[in-house]
Length: 217
DNA sequence: ACCCAGGGTCATA
DNA sequence: TATGACCATGGG
Image 1 (cartoon, rainbow, N blue to C red):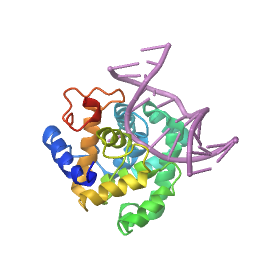
Image 2 (cartoon, rainbow, N blue to C red):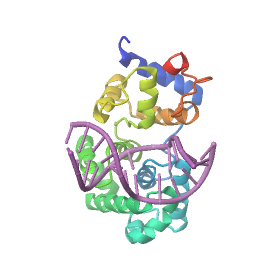
Image 3 (cartoon, rainbow, N blue to C red):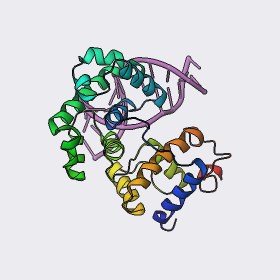
Image 4 (cartoon, rainbow, N blue to C red):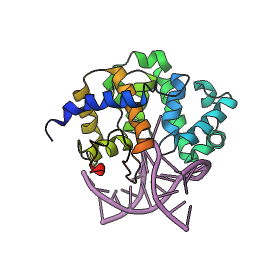
């Protein structure tokens, strides 16, 4: 494999042609992105949608309203998303931190790598959740790595699935250059593609990336 | 009756 | 630092 970096952009163009622009993140407000990013941890998005709908119904899809809830009450509202006890406290952790930073205008003044470090300091916010929030809620130039990304690109033979999160992230960011819109679309396309053609059980027939994928051989 | 989902933390060796 | 247990619901 000669220069795997040079294939990242062409693969992006191909996914974009096949699936079209995804327009991610699926949310109405930056705050809703933050909530969704926590709720979707190791959880099917369909379940997250139910939980979000219940929060909207209860009119607590907003910082202060959500902070006013007890962990127990928040837990029952987000129950469909699973892991609801731990996620309730993670959401409250994130919200307390966010308010202490001064909310949107507060975080807007913080430089990206600094902001990322502070986010990672919140209990329950790991690298993927932090980067999803940075990229989709606050528009920062950070590439999001998830299980799908590892699966797809290691299956194609462009990376090792067990590579550290940071090294994969830097690899993508360096190969693609500083392109916020591309980061947003690319990760969305990866998720869309994985859901339809790159399941855990490999079946790559009809896959748009078939000619690249080792499982198709 | 399994397996899987847009992770992360904590205890243990 | 590197595994493993744990968190929990809902769809295939």
